[in-house]
Amino acid sequence: MAMNAYGNAFNTYKSNSINFASKDQLLIMLVDGAVKFSKMGRQAIIDKDINKAHENIIKTQNIFYELMSTLDVAKGGEWAESLIKVYDFITRRLMDANIKKSEAIMNEIIPLIETVRETWNEAYKKSKSSL
Image (tube, rainbow, N blue to C red; front, top):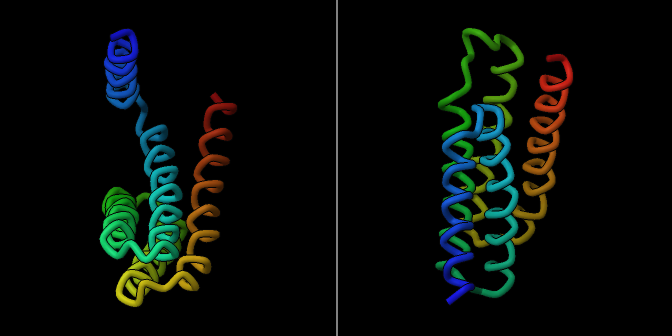
């Protein structure tokens, strides 16, 4: 019973932390999710779990589509345009990995997804320290 109350409290906390998160924090949560889902997708490929692989790779792709749709290229200029190219490359490689159920493509793309996460984490830290 206590575990259930804890679970409910945790879920409430989790949904509230998402509701009150800044746009930057949401972005970090998204890229964290992309890293997690891409690794789960790779593991599912290794485990020959086709449905789970497909599900997690699609989740990862959707995160990058979301990131692309929220990028303000007019404001961000060249920087935003180069990010769009990186995101586009990632989504296309994820599509290839999903079609071929290729662990090799996932091994190639996961470090890039992790680099995107590190870049956004650094940008977030810099923006917080300059306030």
